[in-house]
Length: 396
Image 1 (spheres, rainbow, N blue to C red):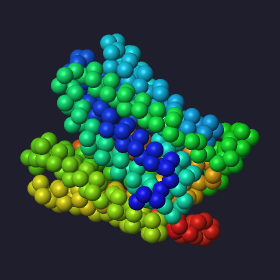
Image 2 (tube, helix red, strand yellow; image 1 turned 60 degrees about the vertical axis):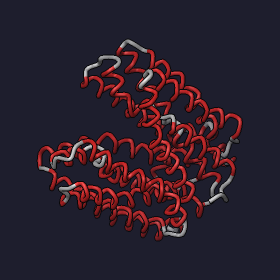
Image 3 (cartoon, rainbow, N blue to C red; image 1 turned 90 degrees about the horizontal axis):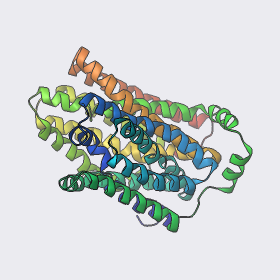
């Protein structure tokens, strides 16, 4: 577990600290309606601006990570975000609140492609599933702790949420400033200095497998999002309220905390694309099984099934992107991959809600099963394409 480079552990510890202090986003809608008396519809629109900022940030952050380097992008994200988080916490005007929400969303997630590119820089291909799995573990452990701390702080004052979030983000920035050295390879720096953005985009389109992989990730994410949006609605229709849904999602979090590290350790020996294919089968089976669920135990079982697919995919998918990306495009490709997930967070609720309302729950979950199985086949097809084009053996 501990044979990863020191720079990785700086990113790991910083990610954990940052996510433990991720107070604002989970409570933002509640804060806007309760503390700022903003109507629910407008509050929902404002919260969506955070997602819009996050989507844009992935693309910009990836390009900047290649052009400026990993460390400058990390510092921009972690040193600017706290300022706007605090402004958001004290703002009274709805337009200022909306603008700050968008800016916070953008700068909060600006760092993500830089972290992924840095991991690709410092961890050899065979160790990347383990490294990305550990980062995902830190994110989820922090996300499990944050709401508990946030609820405690909100009992005193909502302003403490914003101050605490800003402080932990700043601490990550200080870790990067004093404990992290630039990892961008010299050839990547040279390429960025002598290549225009349009030329880089042409180079990007010359490797369609990476774009296809990101497209598949979009649909994978749309299925996954149903666990956050339509699953609680379906459970409610079976007289299972928020408490039951909370317990099922808690099972997801517990499994991630306890299984991500051992699974990511094993994943270093697994072929990449077949692993993604199996992950898609777990996702398909888990959400498809929901069509037969009517009790808490059956809903919980469905969550257990798709959680295994989630853990495997989050360890291996960014490793595939890192393996296949040219050194000079690591940041950009990680940004594109991340933006695909950002789009999934937008389209997933819309698509799932429409199918559920129009055709009913059985059709929704059956559609998730069929789409997941198609994605499984697509991953295998991409693996064969990688083999035919003589891409790295680890990705096959």
